[in-house]
Length: 414
Image 1 (cartoon, rainbow, N blue to C red):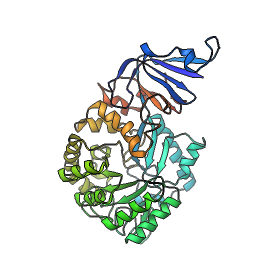
Image 2: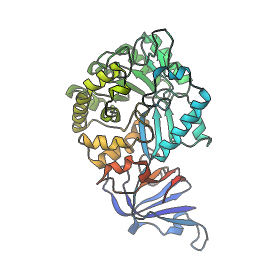
Image 3: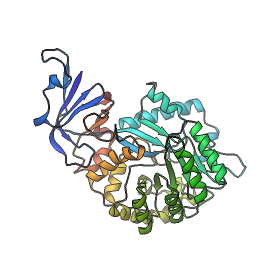
Image 4: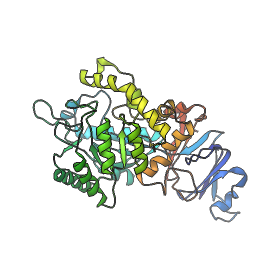
């Protein structure tokens, strides 16, 4: 049966100008038509049902609201929440945590994110639970854990020697160990392998300017992932030297990228590497009362540098895919990231493409997701407002009034 969504402004995710009086036809979970109402097929024939058939089509009036593809968040950590102490996981009840993560998944879906890449901290079982209809949430790709060296960004060892987050980090200190660590993640069901090429802000033992895995170690991971049906490698890389190492190693995406330079923009453009800038972590106000001293000092030192360098990468045309580092920042506010991209010089329409078709390209699913085009899966959202005039509307979950996945209604406030 065909469902027609009409009386809407269509932003299809490809970067094309909006269609002011548009129609979206959905048939059996796929898009049958997306475009101007004036050229839409007759409603009954859209499902190839006889014109006289009853119940063969349904029309939904969207009241002039804006219709967009379902959004992606290419960098999240569903196991984390802001300001949660690192050692809290040692005393947490894993059953309760399972339900808390399920709640975050549902809230994120209702905020307009229909596909999400978790870059460390949750097992592949959450992906299977969503695919099996046991819980509601974005379509998931998972990294399972983050590969780091001893003392690196994903080494969560406490002074006592206890690993405070064994579910998050995987340690490797040679090229062979890095390859074996990648194999363990792939065995655990990883869709993408996550590695650390630099230190980070929230980790106690290192700094964003510190290098993480060596070029040889990074190349071993990239090679191993490629041997498994060409799976991609995402790299935590904040400082300049580590970003350079990651780009030379052939990773698919640079996560954060705060130390991007003109040279590195050239290299990313040459290799077609995506940048996932996670600006939500940069724009979040700093509160020393709720942060460790080392975390506050690093964030304070890097905030301005990060904005300047990412703005330059945007201006240079480096491919951008939306990612938020949700978990470090609040969940279910993912689309605030669009406004941060616009704040650093991206047009509202380009920011929407970064969160839809560009993100789908990074995740390798642009053949079926990321834009509203005939033949693609019917993942879409409806927002109350004009995001091209007020991009912040997409960052307000209450303004997202309708969410569908594969044509199935997940949220309806119409």
